[in-house]
Length: 349
Image 1 (cartoon, rainbow, N blue to C red):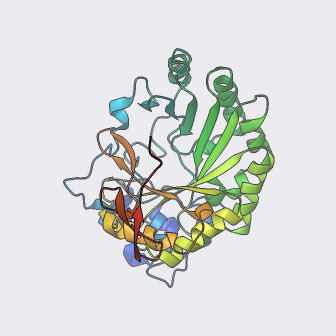
Image 2 (tube, rainbow, N blue to C red):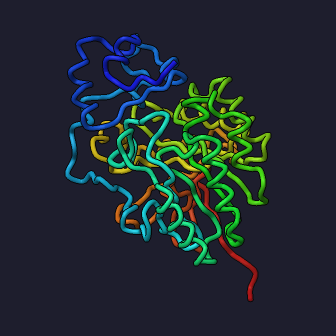
């Protein structure tokens, strides 16, 4: 089945009433729509608060922009020395290989630059990015993103992998993707081999998923194919109001990641992307959720709650604190919130 890319297609698939077509068309004129069959099939049309629908179906509130919201909410353009390349941290760069995705999330922080009509990275731009990376031996890791880089063909993925693997000081290739949950059938053995074969670099795939229902048997099988090919997997999740802002929901997601051999990595506070305020909880709400989550799961299932600061200032952890005072005598909070004194008295020097 093809992706559902128009309001009419969404309605004909039973995902919305005809009365919503005009509202959805207004949103579609501004932001790309694409609901892949694997995710569309998870939506309960009878549930007005369905967590999958909130992620992929258009919403009239997307046209309401707050003054604080930004076209480039984390400042990619401010740290872009060549087209498609972002060098925000000394030891790693972000390389945007393409501008299309298998699914267009309604909260996307790059929603102004992705979609069917957006320009991807051409051969000249890729060559310039490679030259920049080659000239800087401090670059240890290349993070490949887009769009969704795995939405490209295995042939193109293999070409990009080989070119980057030829740079000796690059040791880690990390691919960010929704493909295993959005279109698991496209995560083939050929795709997995394109990422891992013919080189000795360490390969990570960061899987973006926001609700446990996304990790279907098909999605888990797609992850297993990547892992069998030698990929290490971590997760990325965006904390979204009405999707995963209940501790039970977040707990279920983190447990299913671990069961699928995907290490929970980042829990992102939503960026200040245009038209996304209806999906953003407060930081205080996020900290309370993370505190509650830590009381329920092991460290293996705990992501780091982070905020990507505007203006290219970088990512910071914003989880709750567990120590009060300035030391050496502290008050510590245990995972259940009870307070206990702790003396930080080391050996005399």
